[in-house]
Length: 579
Image 1 (cartoon, helix red, strand yellow):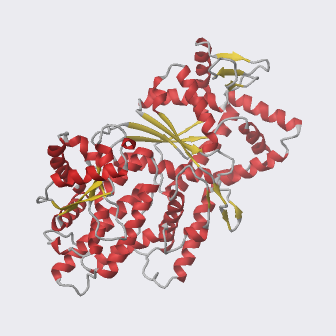
Image 2 (tube, rainbow, N blue to C red):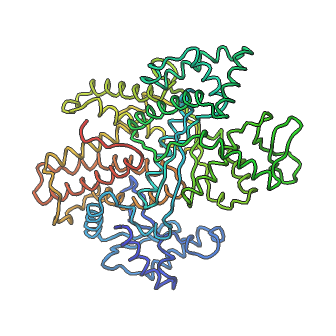
Image 3 (cartoon, helix red, strand yellow):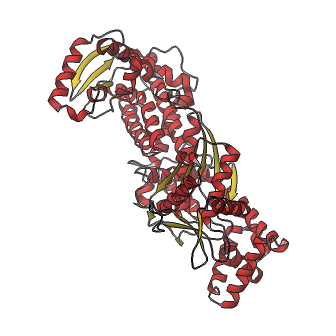
């Protein structure tokens, strides 16, 4: 990684002056973010971060003084061409020719692995991770939270894979529970096998809505209870109908997830843990953790004082298991099966207390590995409607974004040469959805807006795709052959330097996202990269320049496109080459 070589070189010099080992200094040396103020240094050392003790012990003046004293002891060398100080920082400017040469060589050599091989990750052990995401309920509405869970989980899995971890992606379906009693009865009355085959999600939803209207009726209630009991007792007829619901639904989900560019290693579900949840109840009983209430339910006391002020119900009065019981069984089973180092659940924040209870019970049961479980929660999306009205199915959202994008492309003057406009519209539209979703903190709610998401200018997914396609066409126009042996020393213009400085920062941004699992760091990095590239594209023409300069600039744009594509793919976006 280009930045690593520079950080190491600066750390070596600092370590002699400060008498600290260079590896202790590397994390304190960071790339200076590009600003509009031009003529920035490339790296800065924060004085507060290397001083033992907390930075609050020092007043700003004191830090400033220390920075100046330190800077006086340092010398420029073949790598560093200028040393200056800022508020509590020592700033280093890298020799300009070396900067261009090192960064571009590294980006083009590492390709898709640029940034992921950085020594910033050297202390992070390679892990086995299980990520549970998506997880819709069969026969119920696919709400927008499922879309968020799907794209966020996919991003976390992509990032971990890129950093060399082993990841298992699990879709944990809501495929068990009382609603299947109702659904079974509903299907016997209103079901149609042909419709179940051709559009299972829609048909099961329609059946569920119809039977729910009758759900208040005592006879229907009794029939539903009986059907679910039959399922639990493994009645052949009931199970075979249920299995059809599940199998056809999964087939349909797989097709839709494919449109989203998402795959799962395992379609699990609550049904898998019906048996195992009984074993969990037995374990809870043996450990003396299960208590019966006067209502006949089984609970686990989670309170500090053991006064039942905080409890979790794990068994209904009729002896059937609950969602949390099945989740306990699933966690234990996955540990046995995958022997994971970390397990991440991606759901909306309404489930936060559910996961707190889940983790507390596992801890009481003596499973220390629960410390390595994590709930990544996200906020709610308001106002997502399609032209047909509210969103019922995920496919509605995908169709809507595709058709709106097709309209925008048709009315834009630039869209002439796209071979498959429908597929391009789908990829660009998805980028728009993902960027709108990932721009803020995952935990914050946001108001959805089609117009804002699909703008072609501004900080949108459409703008990222447009930038990528534009850089790609530049390469097409000026020969596609990989650029080698080019003298990039001519890239001295401020606009070229800004792009180089920004490319230098990519590993730090990946590191930040890997630490807090927030995609927004990568999103804002890619949007800035696209804005910088747009400026450079205007001020550093390839056409009409001398062959040597044209080649050097082409090399800069090729490196930019490469990093842009890498970042987009991590976010779950497929870059388009024409639009």
